[in-house]
Image (cartoon, one colour):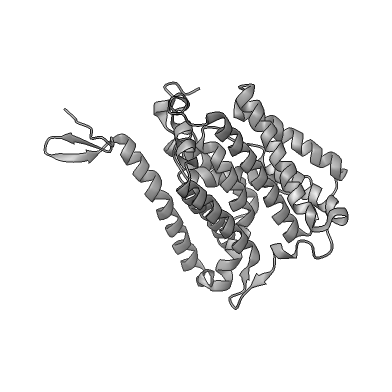
Length: 333
């Protein structure tokens, strides 16, 4: 006969305590991504020792910035048990809008575009929460809508960006030549970490993702929290689109479209449960680094970039199989 303690972490069978299935799952989701990341770094370093040079590390981190910004926002929606499939199309739309508006607005185009994207997220969140439309369908429709807006606004063409308005997105800082984009992403991650650590937001997100009815009974602001998650996710998508313009010197209606699958892969590979209620910004960082280092590893191994999407798809399926909380899904459809 087993006895569970107050935390539900251990059960006793015979003489010694053992981890419950839930605790074993959480331990696996915590440890496994770090092990995978360490193994990938070690394998690439063996194949190419130059990978561990400071310049190479900064380059890898710099290439991870747009994915990190997108995944940080989308992670909040997944934590509450939803999903945001529109982040990549929003980033592409943002790239077009900022490229169009910089000549007239200058630097003010950046906050204006982020606000526009945040309003798009507000609309999606309101439709999901108020109209009770599944987030998958709302954001899938949003993906088509924002892609269409980007195509119409750009005339289905790439819009070049000149001048120094976005120089702050790709400069090098200090004696170590640290990319400014890496510092910006680190500051954004720090804000996320501080908010989740020192405010009730993380508790609300986790409780809603674990059991929304229980969160309502506990007095959590469920409606506001879920809508805010979509707003922040969309704002991050807009910011990621701006960062992409800074490194490509152009906006395009499909500029960030290829990032949707890597975003989802990074979140779930990092250990955030696709069913919600378990995860965080630290896990997302690890997941983004895994995806980024894997891409570098495939390049070092001479694998054609066309196969990347296949690897990402396999990773998503495997990670979801490991992270999904089947206690919430008595029937898988």
